[in-house]
Length: 150
Image (cartoon, one colour):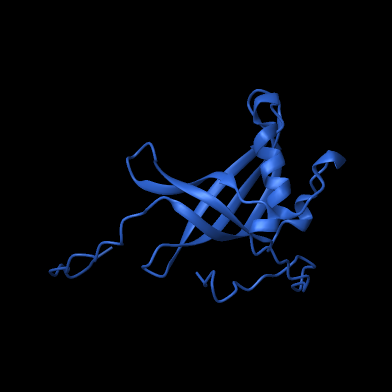
């Protein structure tokens, strides 16, 4: 590869991440198994956070480990899912919106990211699901104005 070296202006820094209650939309939900053999759902979100009007990516893992069932219940309450049914259909999660309290954590490389600490129940959140489908039959969700677009 050949190129012409030139001076590159410094990239503007993003506003610092801050802890808080933010709306999210689920863009991926995949079932799997943890290393310890528990059933998990790996979730990916787009989160509108802070006053800088930026959409950020986040992720979470919901696990059936007995010590993690509080998080499963919190997630079910947020999504309007009956926890007592003992089942979450990941196909119904794509495009769902909710609210969670996010905290700032660091990656192994030291980069900050937002991680959900707990979910806000549907009664206290704006939780709407758009049931329109894309060409492949998957649920589609446009970010609402207050959640934003990537």
